[in-house]
Every structure is written in C-alpha cells, then in structure tokens.
Length: 227
Image 1 (cartoon, one colour):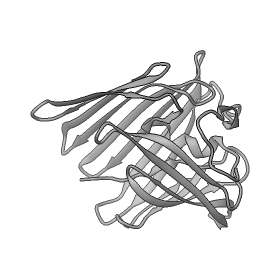
Image 2 (image 1 turned 180 degrees about the horizontal axis):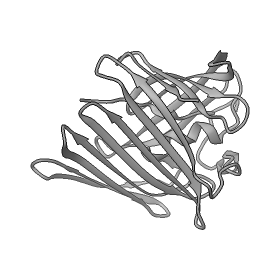
Image 3 (image 1 turned 90 degrees about the horizontal axis):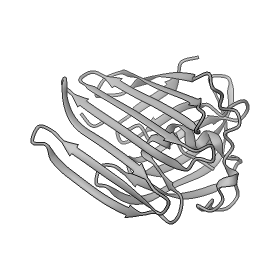
Image 4 (image 1 turned 120 degrees about the vertical axis):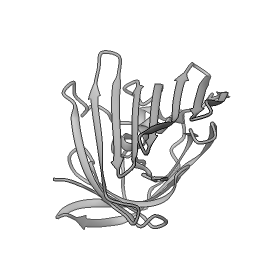
C-alpha cells in the first residue's frame, strides 16, 4: 500500500521564494525540551489510520519522530537538525503486511549528504552521495517545516528537498493561497508539492502554527488534527 502524507505536514512559507542561505527566517524558538505530540486521524479509500508527530528541543538541536499507521502499513521516521533547521541525520522504516520492506538512513556533512536505502526481501541496496552546497530539506523535516516560517497570504516558497524513494534532490514548492476557518481555527490555506505529490493543507495562523488538516486528491485522503 502506498501512503502519501505530503511533506505534511510540512511544508511552507514570505513574499518571494525563500532560498537556502536565508536560514535566519526559520523560527524554532517555540520548541521546548518537553515533547509536543500531535495526533491526526486520516480517512481514505485504502483505509483509515492514525498519524502522530513528536518534536522537542535537545542539547544539540531539534529532534522529531513521526509514525503513520494504517491497516497493513506502518511508517516510522526519526530526524535530528540544528535549531536553524539544518538537517544532521534521519532514518525511516516502512513495514507492509508485517514485513520490513524499506529502510532509509541519511547523514549530512558540510557540503554533502549520504543516503542509503535497503529494499526487502532481496536486500537490494540503493546508495548515493549528493552535493548539498545549499540548504536541503530532509524528508524527516516535512511535518515541521511549515510551522517554522513566516506565512502570509500570497507567499510563495521553493526549496531543494531529498526524495528518499530514488535518492535524488527535487523541488519542494509551497504557495499560500489564502485564509480559511477549519475546526473553528483561523488557518492559512496552502497548496504544496514535493516528491510525494500535491496536497492542500491548512496551517494554524496563531500559536505554534499547527497543521490542522491535509487533503490529498489523488488518494482521496483527508487527515485532521485530533483536538
């Protein structure tokens, strides 16, 4: 089963394209040592499920955990990054029908990143080292990225992001199309695209800019924060 949870949540951003060097634009001051845990309920033709994200501040930066659970499918992601969102390391594991099908490990150096993916059951390995002179969004940062940037109606943003499906660098684009109320919460309405496809999502305007809702037309999946 192929589950697409758009860089969920994650994605997003001031009136012109935000490029790599502008790392000071990221706001992570609200992240504390006490983990913030957000739980979502998702509904789709393939089956309903749960999606949970945990983020916290550590002595070395920021740490994030993500778990996606639907019938017959589980995906777990872990990532660490600096307080200005520079990725350091990430890992993901995908289990389908009780069997481990894909593991991905990624590490970042000053000007390069190394990514290795093992596919089961034949243990086929895909491995690559990529240049990253500019800022690269790691797949583990998707649920957090949108929440750390200054959103406003009409804003467009574009990043370079890592596609762990084929170990390549691809665009991550975000456009703030307007504002809307969702679950009685004032939100920015976002259209985003990344290696997983296109999605529409709603980001809380106040507070810590929580991701409130995500819609993915190609899978008819709707994911909403459990308040």
